[in-house]
Image 1 (tube, rainbow, N blue to C red):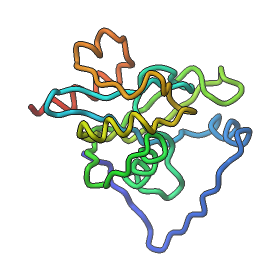
Image 2 (image 1 turned 30 degrees about the vertical axis):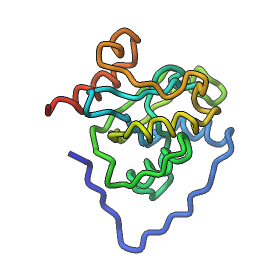
Image 3 (image 1 turned 90 degrees about the vertical axis):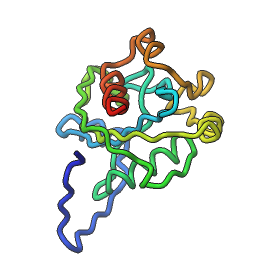
Length: 178
């Protein structure tokens, strides 16, 4: 069940991009709210993963990132998908999976060893082969290992990779109804 969103009428936000230094200080005193997506192929019960370059998790992971103040989670997810892998998908294709809380021992900002605390909306999207192929050509090289690419894995293959437990849990949630 997706979390309820309560918004006062006529609320206005003026989000601004924080400098790296400002953001590094800010996340020491707050929980960052993010959106993540797990791309899947329902027909083969497979997941598409990318290998992240940046901390807090430099390994196989979801596509995603932080929400902007006042931004709806689905709108933010569409924005992150487009900026990180170049696909423009409709909000209707996003299926809510869960809310996850991540505590990472490292972070991308200096000092790296402070860690980070984030709360993430996790969505899934069933991709066509054409979309997966296109996404593979548009991976943001600052975020992901573009030479490794957008790869498709079965559950058995995911187990052999030793991925983060959140990926296993998401797989089970996405395919449990079948």
